[in-house]
Length: 397
Image (spheres, one colour):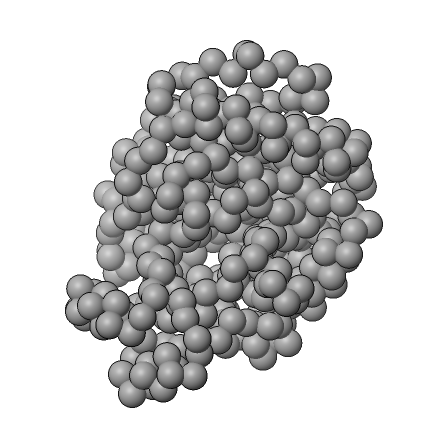
């Protein structure tokens, strides 16, 4: 009898994960929100697509899934999107299904929990404070020079982050937040270059790593507008070597046994790398596509392979990968379907098709060629396509 995997997602993503599980002989059932009932899901391989209203409380989702379980035996439950991970962790614990539980999931979702855990794991973390006791906050601001950032503990990307320059600004912000303020933390703002490390972990060992560097910091792009770029850095460079080693130590220390991760670090003006955040998921903003074009490794599909191998008790082996380089340029566009045909470099391997967005992925054997192209294209994208919009309250993809 084939194993059955229940995938839960509030966003349209993870098709390659589901296809890989099905290709390995598993039944795959998808539970998503009603508005995505007709989205581009891989229906040819799905056993069924079930829907539920958006924003259901945990208890209602638990009743939905346990009702489904009367007719289907689920061997694994997987959250395809970060915002479903806490719910899936609770479902696993309630139904006694193997996988990451609520405490470990918090290390990859709750920015306060992950900071404590990263410190215990040996990473440098900018000085921070929970937003709980006001005396503690006063002492923190007296001893840690500003500016600071007030961050939501459970949002993704740069959504909801506020830059704080002096204490009175913090107190006004906390008054606005009211009873929600304990869901935030205060942290020293560290200027510098921001990197992300996308990795695969198998049985507490990081077995595949790609180190990339953002152009403008995502927080700046989110709040001030602009063109988003990221590129894989030279594997022989010192920053790539340092972050590969740091990440290989940190991810297992955070509690990950197996899966994929997307971690962000900042190189401060002192030259040291500081931990920013980590998620137990595939990176968004076409990052997985950049990784695949450079290396041939599809992070979604490998995540599926890891789940099925674990389910069957067989060893997972990471596929052989290319040592190429790639990067992406992406921005919000003024027109619904921007024409990117004016960009015609032979290194262009992908043109993004996303409503009101312009984007390209470039690939080259040489990291310097990718860097030069992205620097040129980011300026031209700003002139040709760039639109601005208010910072969203929630992610849109």
